[in-house]
Image (cartoon, rainbow, N blue to C red; front, side, top):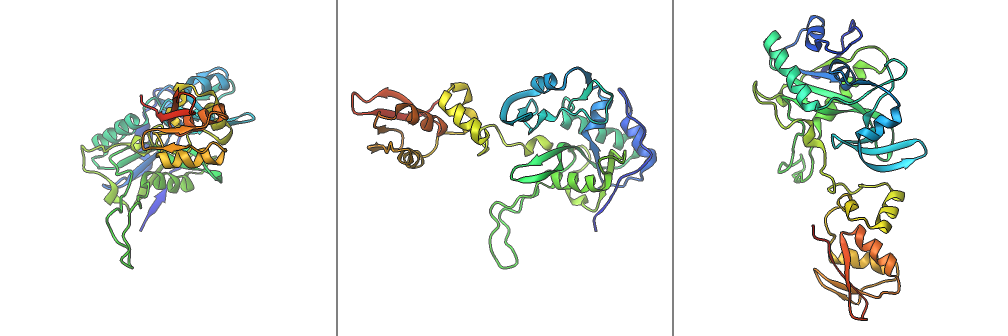
Length: 313
């Protein structure tokens, strides 16, 4: 049975606050529990409340704009997370101030776990959460941006279901599922930044083992099929700046690029695994499509068209 509860009675958290000292009088923890803490109170305790214009702080926390629609910006931030406004939050804070995400959420989770073990004598997992939207779906859910002492993914690869079918890519992101379950108990406006999830002690690691942290849930830049929004991808491919190549991913298979070129009326006349030749009538379009597929036009093929080869670092 899974139990989730979030205690009332948490005071306003300020810089330097002892979060474990606040939490322990409010709950009875046991080995195998998972303590869930919102990133906002972690940030407040760590002094990540800053003065100034929110847009300026979004710029400072952003490493790449993924997509923008009107005032909304989806960005990849300095933690590698892709989210709206880089995680910069202007709610539940004094006017003129904003809250930045913790400097290192996994480290914050590790520190909380150690302090709980020292003071309460229990082995718990810790998850630091933040709210994020989901591609293709309305609404938001809480996700894990920091974790310690917890298996963040539960892999079922190599197992079979009740019908004997092999499970190949089934790997629930259990740290995110715990974060969302905790948010149901915490609520957004109830002043309950802590929650305890009990019943999944199998996911909690032995004392002294912190595990990979929530960072392990972040796909590396370029390993995601959606490195840019639809509009932004068109523009970046046409610009063809080498610095933009990584989000498009590793070079596509020659057959995939040939299919894309044929779709724009520039079907290659010769295709090899590492080289192909295209007509040069649509040179700019060919360059953009090639760039988006991780290929580049290296040289003209002596009047026979454009020669394309996979991009190499």
